[in-house]
View 1 (cartoon, rainbow, N blue to C red):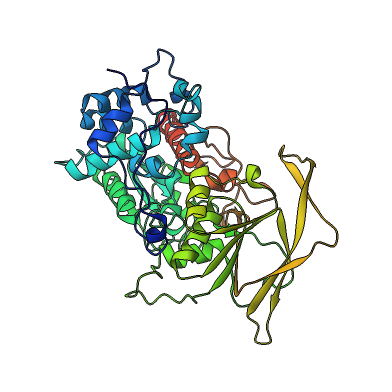
View 2: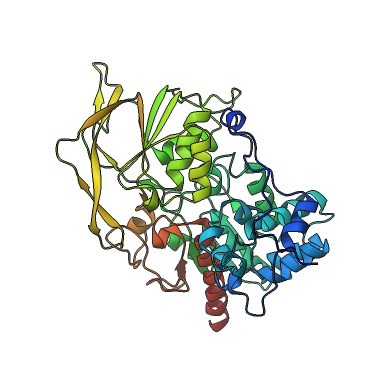
Length: 461
């Protein structure tokens, strides 16, 4: 019988006061009973708009129908027919802007909890699986993938399923890209990422770490080694700064560096000797998901006061509503319609305060958002001993500078068509390396499209 409750089945969470002191996962996930109850809210529409809102075209009503029946393994098979990283997507995808925003149930109430159901199915499979995936039959062709983030992993897994011999090259000492260095443990446990990667290696994907393409070897050398195509999914790991006075003071971090030290280098664990100074008062500049991650990490690292400094208002915050809600619950203070002008230091070169100016919203800019304008004479300071800059990233220029014939934009993004084909024959690209910093699921969509294009390219050859 259908569940016509207008509200979602709530997902259990850690108490905010407790979770702000640890790095354990905030949301605890559905039980079997909760998942079945929520799945019964799905109307199984004849024209499923929810699927149209999914970048990787997960067969949403089909998998939810199986959850409602209690057939969780079949639901998993349906999801993974189009999505190779369901446990990741169920946790970090912005479903509220994609599949759930199209859900018919959302017209007169809350949409079906598609993301929470996807996470449940993936977690159920992880804890109940009996055997690994069988190795696909080889087709005799080799493809190299640069970067083991969501774009690279999706491309590699999609090609491996078709019988390709795929090798992934990762610059860091662990695979996973932004999934391991950027997203905190309390949002995406690293064991989840590693188990998703294990599923890909079971398909035959080989992963080589500590391999920096452009330094360890070049794209040209990959072709010389017998690879017939190369996919570049190296992300956008080059942080941007505001170019204001004081950004060179001790205690100023890019969000990338701060999160990498905590997430990949485990600075939050006593048994890891990762150098990171513990600050009492921290300002995080920016309003995206990365800014929320940095602020929430800072709170867990022992900061007494953490401020989000953002030049627009709450309605313009680009971060997911869920992340903003969690940050507020955990005691993060939002200083909205404020913009930094300079970072002030003490006599020893350490941060002592950040000077800001109040803003007001004017006419829309090129992005369609109202442009923030300074209020004259409204300068003020916030006493802090650290500032984390989280205003965006760009692709690292290394591959561009070491690869002939690869067209890039003025911002360093690789130019590629809608299926990932670049100006260089046999080279494909996707994800943040092409678009600049975006979401995990959009990177996965790019990896999936590029895999299909690489398959067609090699077959046509």
